[in-house]
Length: 143
Image 1 (cartoon, rainbow, N blue to C red):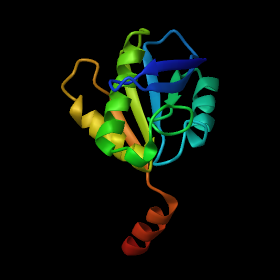
Image 2: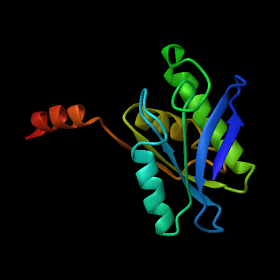
Image 3: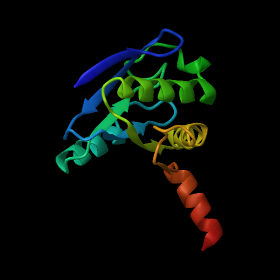
C-alpha cells in the first residue's frame, strides 16, 4: 500500500507498506545515498511479506518519489526523515521496529537506533549492508 506523509520540514515522503499480519512489529528499510525504495528494499520487503512479516520502505527526502533536493541532503536530515517515518508508523499501530539499511541507509539506521534506544518504542535492532566495493576492500584487509 502506497503511503504519503510529511517530514518535519513539510516535504512529502513516499513509502510502501507491506502489511502481512496484524502484528505491531515491522521491519523498516532505509535505502542508500541517491538510491530509492524501489531497489533492494523492494525485493526484501516483498520477501518478508511472503513470510508473514510486516515491512515498510520509503524514499528519503530528495530521492525517488519524495520531495526535496538530494544535493542538499545530509545524514542528519535523513535520520530525521527515518524518525518521521517511525512516528507515522506508530500512528498506524506499529510499536516495535527493526531497522535495515543499505550503504548510507545503514549509517542512518545505526544512528536512529542509538538515538531512540531509551524510548519504549525504540528499534529492537539495526543492521546494515556495506556497498560492495567497501565489502571487497574491507575483506582484503582481513584475509
